[in-house]
Image 1 (cartoon, helix red, strand yellow):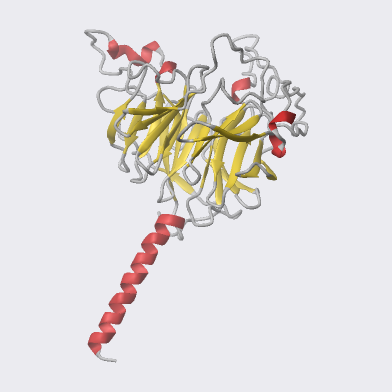
Image 2 (image 1 turned 45 degrees about the vertical axis):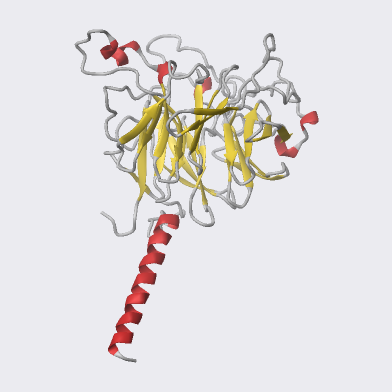
Length: 414
């Protein structure tokens, strides 16, 4: 072989190696550090995001989605703002910060705000109880809320409304007692997932999964816990239980509150139940496949947090009691981006951690973060998303009110 041909071959090999390495890093982080249990390790990026512009106040981050450009879209729910957080809204006001900002914010990989819109004054149909945002691969942004008259809205990325799912309840309709057989209208459409492969919307509500056409809104199918048909789903409240350190009683129905629906590349549907500390796995047609439990011995959200006192402490010096709002281990979940989608990452607010679960087996491998207000700690983590580089974004609600970025820890990194 001549020197020229040898050099060309070496150059070609280096180019191929670089390309494969680049694609591999974007998809599966081959040098990511693992702990002794095989859980991938993460470290907070304390400089992401940049401070919001225009004196905007950061509020409860109830939804996060990553678009095709790896931009981060998040819902900045403003109705939880305290008056002291909006002291710059007077006219005039001597305060340096803050004012109520847009409720949908788009940030780039450096944490800069590149686009923002939405809020109570933005559109008459804007959800009053924001819950979910999904940025699809075609450049549209889907937003939903949990109030009875909120629905699922489809916008262009610059904020033009192009479709309203509707299915709002008619005047006089009552949410209770629940009716799991009703599919023409839905009281709470806030927790949904868009399946672009089949052009379908998955909505979790009461004790069921409902699937609708994502273009026409036509109802297509639905099922209850463990794949039972809607006709068999109970309309009675799931009984509470007395927590004594063990898991809640087994339940065939879904045990509300249902908190997430996620769909993997191999067409598995994952439904999270805060009332059971459980993930049920289905095919897209509703055939039940398996159950996963994450920290099953935690008090679950059934009755008053496993029967524990959900009221206020008897005195200012009494220990804080468990409350209904932080029961259960199922908050939001995201699936890893590697080709096999090996991991599930689930937020949990009682311990303020992100659980790491092996997707195929359902085995809990570990967790990252913990309770607190320093960078890398969390206060009521809820929404979660992952980008192409494997960075994980976690949004905090209640009094947390921030979004944090956790980057993969690489072997040999300092």
